[in-house]
Image (cartoon, rainbow, N blue to C red):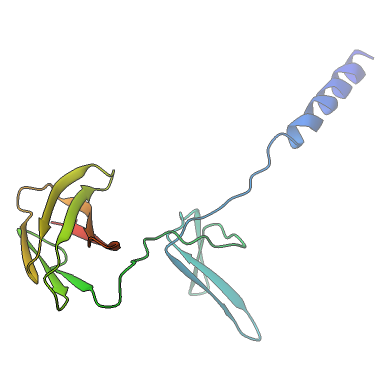
Amino acid sequence: MKYFITYCFFIISLIPASYSQMLSPTVLASAGDYFENSSASMSITIGEPITETFYGNGLILTQGFQQGHYYAVGISPISSDNIQAQVYPQPANKDLYIKMDYTDNRLISLELTDITGKSIINCSFSETVFHLDVSGLASGLYLLNLRSHENYMHTFKILKE
């Protein structure tokens, strides 16, 4: 009888544990795709964590985890019709050039921030080609925000070597 009660208590204690956790995984990925033919299908998510790799018969299968819905995260440029900008070289080492393509003499506000959003450089310019010295910055990823007086214009990712 003592073992029966212990056994029943053990079984009853396992029931809530089986319902204690439900995971709904979501991946924020930079790209992905889905392919299908008559004999197989393949779904790809770039940027997901790798969890396991299988080898056999000359094939390699690396599995992460897949989800049914993809969420895109990014920065979309907003620009007026007559203002375009180019930032070069990428990645930058000492010098960064901003080339503006506009016909009138506009004042452009420039803000360079680190990846946490901390403002590093703030200035304005009206030249069509502007030189920015980035030699004093640490290596890493930065965001370059360009704004005209009418509206927000463009954000560039800058990689500093």
